Image 1: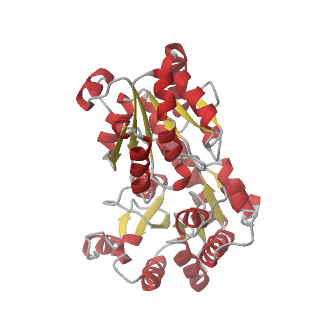
Image 2 (image 1 turned 60 degrees about the vertical axis):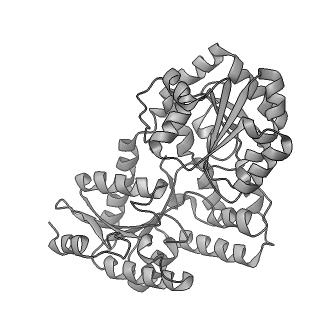
Image 3 (image 1 turned 90 degrees about the vertical axis):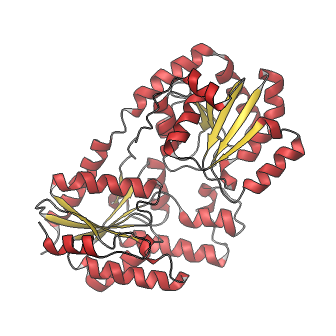
Amino acid sequence: MCPQLRKNAESSSAENGTPLYHCRCYDAGMKLLIATGLYPPDIGGPATYTTMLEAELPARGIEVLVVPYGLVRTYPKFLRHVVYAWKVFCASKRCDLLYALDPVSVGLSVRIVHLLTGKPYFLRVPGDYAWEQGRQRFGVHDMLDTFLTQTKQHPAVRILNAVERWVARGASRVIVPSRYLRGVVHAWGVSPEKSVVIYSALHPIRVSESKEHLRARLGYTGTVFVTAGRLVPWKGVGTLIALIPRLKKQIGRVTLVVVGDGPERARLEAQTATLGVTSDVQFAGTLTKDALGAVLKAADVFVLNTAYEGLSHQLLEVMDIGTPVVTTDVGGNPELITDGIHGLLVSYDNTEQLVDALGRMATHHELRQHIVQRARLRTKEFSETDGVAQLADLLITHCNHAPV
């Protein structure tokens, strides 16, 4: 049972307690190295995805070795990439295939190791990192579809863009969680035969308390809207805050609960004071999964006024928990939600459409019930088993056809 890997997993640790190599091995015929930016105790999509693969792939004949980026976060920025590449290089000697879970933080190191060793690698692309950083830090105002066609960008954005394209083009397969993101990587120059859509799996949030009990415990009265996500410009939370006076006139007592944190929070809190709606907006900050589940179930409507989504885990969780959704018709959202069937879709930042959709969803009981029932059925199509099986088939097929 791979004694050397077990020894590494048990004895090697970073200063923060994260294992240097974490291995699951069940007399597997293939060895896979997963390079991930987040790994427990970190929280987030990559951490959840990695632990799922660790649990499921060994039973399908694939031994899993994880090298978390958390090992090198204490190093200076440039040095951490060098040290991480060295760790991946050392671990790669015992593996048949590498799997990078993003194209920059871990993908760059994996691409370099590929050049040094010839080991093939798969790449997962959950979004366009260059565009996200450009919107947050470097003055990019374009939406992603427009950004992909632009040639004049901030130098830092151009570098990040070049890195993610270079890493993606070198991969044997590029895994994306939506057809929309498949189009994005094609715009990077990735050939269509290399890209594969494997939809993200639903990881349900279990909430045993009733909605009535939760509302009483949380002190919710009137109509409660909730939005959740990192507080960044393209999430459109400022527009939702600006709509509160109009929604109050239309519906009566309303509360907007904002779950999450990020660089926009101070500006958004100032906006509530300027508009005189401080008592109508609750900034809940970052919540545990259990606390988030309670807020989602207690709310009347979940709203996500986003300019961009690859494939939203958050929407899947909300649909499964039974809260009706109003969101935008961008990115991968239409692949999850058919307008009027699984939720209501509006154009990003379209205030008239938002007011109409939120008002209808809040006041029409039959519409809510219709949408909630069909949304729950829809989430059953995003099973963990199917996603793991698709990935395992790709990995094994690639290794079986790789030159010896």
